[in-house]
Amino acid sequence: MSIIKIEDIAFVRFSAPNLTEMRLFLTQFGLSCFDGLDGRLYAKGRDGSPFAHVTEHGDPAFLGLGLRAESISDLQLLAEAESVAMEDATTPGGGKVVRLTDPDGVLVEVVAGQTFEPPEQPGTDMLRNDAALKPRQRSSVRLAAGPAHVIRLGHCVLNVGEFRTSEHWYKDRFGFITSDEIEARPGTSMGAFMRCDRGDIPTDHHTLFLAQLPSGKGFNHAAFEVASFDDLMLGHNHLKSANRTPAWGVGRHILGSQIFDYWKDPWGHELEHWTDGDLFNADDGSNKATVQDLLAVQWGPPHPIFAGKFAPSPKVAGFIMALSVRFKRLFRRSPQGAPA
Ligand SMILES: [Fe+2]
Image 1 (tube, helix red, strand yellow):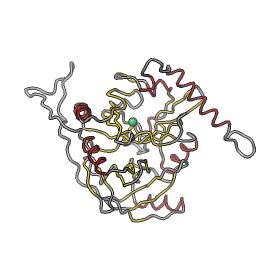
Image 2: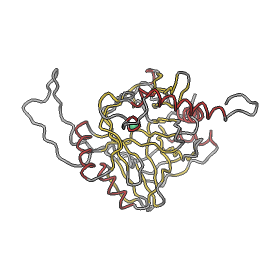
Image 3: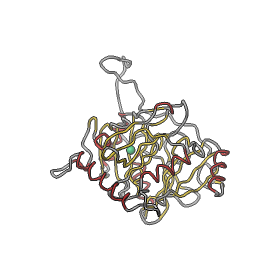
């Protein structure tokens, strides 16, 4: 039983040496930027939440993530269980905040009671015809070029130092449910896609993905839901014409099923556009999956580690990941000598 159950991810926090350059990139990415009273650069989508991305001046870095609790009373429970203060949030939207640090030192701010604005309707949500159903009749498709319409922050992926330790930390506090656990080799898990426990309310296949990779711990990417597939493609063309740096896409994932498009911000932090992802409720259980399932696509270009002449096969990549996980466990023994 977890201390509380969070309802969604709220924001990601960065520092960057040039807020003007960050503003330009985020605007081209499809977020709406505004200056905070605290000197930070804030950016929001169209779901009415006060902000989804915040940058302060400094060396380029990922500084942490925000999660949204269902209520201030839940937040109070969390504060008491963790023996920390629940404070007034000074960020846009106000409310309350509890600040925690995860096992890898990542700042996790849990917020509640924020003021939301009315959501904006996306502009490209038109009827789509296919071979079986043709709901759009006597009208044409005419799309306006420009940035994607980012609706909301959907998930964050963290590369963690030790998967089981981080998994327990996040599940024990926030009630995450595993959607798909990734086994690098049978019996050697290296990560999991985790969704929020909203009971019978369907929720994104993953709000958090924790991955233990040979490259070590750190930020992997943050992913923003856009209005539609057309919108994602318009956003792709816009970022391409602005000479931004693509990372992977456009394609459709296997786990979570999203159509994805990854880009790098000016300092190399990866942000994703996605649309058309799976939704599950608390009764939908958990699955085991392979590295092939994780990195292969239903359509689209291969993951960058599988591209190029000397790319490893998914089997070899899985073997290397499993070796890394096992090697780490070997040197992480309890004082009694039993494997941790
Ligand atoms: Fe993602």
